[in-house]
Picture 1 (tube, rainbow, N blue to C red):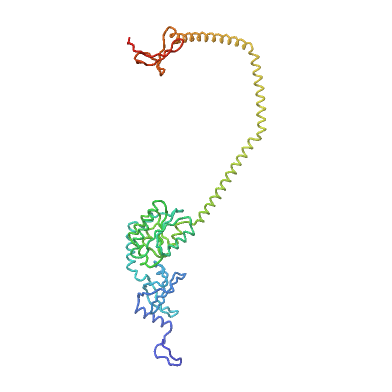
Picture 2 (cartoon, rainbow, N blue to C red):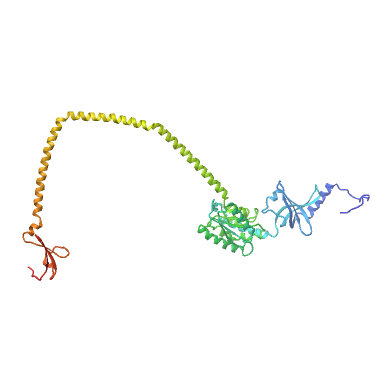
Length: 432
């Protein structure tokens, strides 16, 4: 800026109005530079309630104010943060109310991400066409997992965030960590190996949900989660898988393949398990409902019992009435029996005489049958046979000997006679 004394004469020529000069400068910039592409570091980024974004773009030699209006800001796929190296395209101009140089940004991207982003878009389009992102394939998370599998780096802040959130919300749920690198050339292979280890645990029923997480970073930092083979392995998970990679505006191929995408690792942990307090409140509520239902059933049963008692009346009074009716019935029955006996006295005597005659006849017939049976038994008595000189031979086993073929020389036998038994010994004899 040229400084001159107040009393110095003004240079000859046109005298500009301030607004006109600003417009003239803006026109000159428009003609000389626009459109313009600039690379620099974000500083002082802010988003106004209107949706417009304001920040400075700077490097070691200078800085320029930038404005990104709502329409262009809505196309951002990430939230710029102070220190991010970005590339912007826009138009230079002058903000006339303050006479300041301003770059109106029409597009903004991370520096150097152009080729990677194009590769990302091509892979996303191809896998989407194959159905890997199909919403019908995605499964809901279990409300009460038996265990949670976790894939992340041992040194990542995401590990601390997830474990802290799960211990706070669901300390009863075990967490099984399968560590893996989350950045660098070897990260995809390690991530797949960790997932396969957790898949085996899921098949055995030890875990019901898997978390694949890491913190934020640039597109290059998150590139391991854009690996095609990793994406295909994610969709093969035997249990629901939650992917929480980067910050809310960061997207990866693994996010699209997972059953559920979480904006942050902490959010992934919160999605995986409901708070223990929620289950305890549900138990208390269920207990209260059961108690209310039980009391209602008891009240209803009590009312029915009261109604039944009122219909039955006083038991002792009813019992007395029944006894009185039974007494009257007994008296009537006794009177009827006496009357019947009086009327049938002669018939009873005749019946008794006929009965006695029939009994005597039956006794005589039975005695005759008994005498005949006794005679037959006596005729069949083997001792009558023995008294005629016959004998019953038995061997030592008590078996009857009926043939000489059942004996041998010197064999001991016993003979039963009419008046006793004698022991014998067989001597050789000739056959008849």
